Image (tube, rainbow, N blue to C red; front, side, top):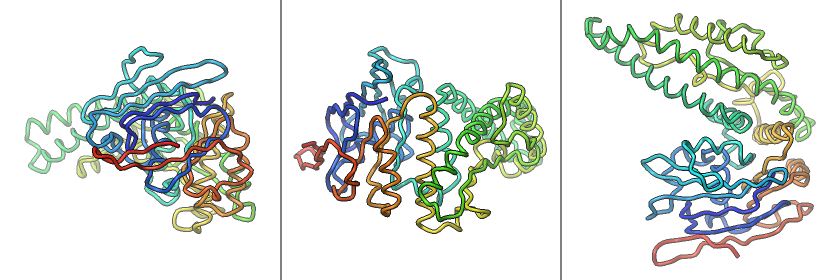
Length: 396
């Protein structure tokens, strides 16, 4: 898979640019703060519908513009697909495929598969569980696009149920006689069922994914840091003892009945947590409370790994994602955002070996010498230009 052409309009610092990178390695070279990362961020957004730098869409739109536009022509096994995305602040984004409008932007998921490694990835090891959940969900939705709808349905139910818990909790603290409180408690069982149904499917998807990813992570870390302790990953579910332990087996062959077992376990744990949830007014059970444990030897990487080990683990997660996507029959686009400057010689070589074998690689760097010499790349110079209507980025 490769991007034959991509176009930005009013995205971050770019008022307009069209590029035709083609297969192979392309290097965007220029000082920090001049717009290099914005190019990769735009393609990453087109692939995942999220940014690796910000959690909202507003910063993606160039100052003074009403919307941002990102488009690409993606070639996969000789077949071309054109995808276009309109990013709006305060209203729904819109998407087109081959010029035809789509009902929902998430329908473009899977057209462009990419793996982006950036300095922010250190948060996969040192950051909050939300960073690791997002890593899993982006990879899951890239491989199985319908899971984006499952995740959206789960999050919608979660918001509704959380609002009910707050209403019920407030009513009970006032003595439990409020009509609103009684109504909330009466309907909570219904929302429990919806939450368990969508949550079980999302949880099953994550568990399958972790099972497929585990060996790739261990091997990638071994290649990068052979002298270090072995690396492994484990999914930690908020279902706790309610989830049958055999469902956490990474070698498990999943069947539809397993999702039904998870749904029943979900309902059981919700019943146990009901009073605590009402007291606190928050939903304490579900995939939104789960984590991916990163383990070195017999210790958690978070809090125990050195700086070098943390970088190695973060890189291993991305390389494992790349390897797993490859098993589906096509190379994802590999994007490396100013990361060679962060890595020592050994880690640079390990990353360069993967990049040299990928169908398409897009790299940003502030200094050409940071990029390993064996990566023969087409080069574009990126620079910021001051104009009367504001700063913009240009290519040379």
